Length: 63
Image (tube, rainbow, N blue to C red):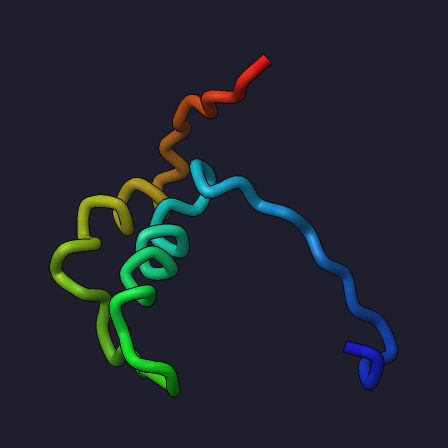
């Protein structure tokens, strides 16, 4: 990141990007290395549509 003129990071809760969260969880079952997905896996279809439509989800937090 230090090689870019400008760079910003923003935290996005998993409830706001379910697809990224599901792929991250799924990746724990893979061997180390690069895995390229040409298409969204079929098991992620409903979550992908929800993310594209901006469906909101409740975030549970401990108080």
